[in-house]
Length: 243
Image 1: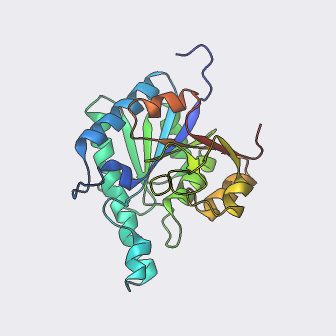
Image 2: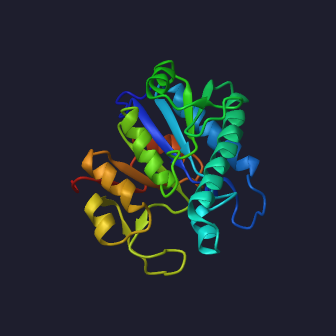
């Protein structure tokens, strides 16, 4: 364990899109999934309690389906089911590395996942099990960003680590604009007022109201999950005030 371990309990938010290469048509790239599982295990081995909220965008995006004419609530429920598929795949990858895990779903699927019960989730974490939260919040119109903020607060996590395919927050899309400016630190209000698309406004407001910091970092770089959670300065931190 590091001499000055920064966190005891964290929540890692993984987008579904990060589970596959851009050019890959498959839902999950299992090499990527295995690397993510390895880094979560390395982090857990330090004694840090790790919870995960996983998205479903590699299979389905409810907002896109709604824009094409599908009823929004129905589209969102399909997306929630997609997150369960990713959660089971991540659980399998972790258990292949001898990590004890529990999948907890906001939508009842008792044959494959436990229902989300806050006290039970906390108890699993206390026993050093990795808990994977699936099914979003269980309600349509809420993103998995909001689910991550909600679950982090419910389990008393100290921080959210949001894993993306970009190495932080920029003033504009760095993949489209060469002169995009990266921010090392931002406030919640900066994210809301500037309309930065790295976090939805509901999640940003929930974190701001409860003073829950968020780190946005690049999941594609080997070692970043472990290094970020162990306290290394990676990506962009969003908090109540810039230090």
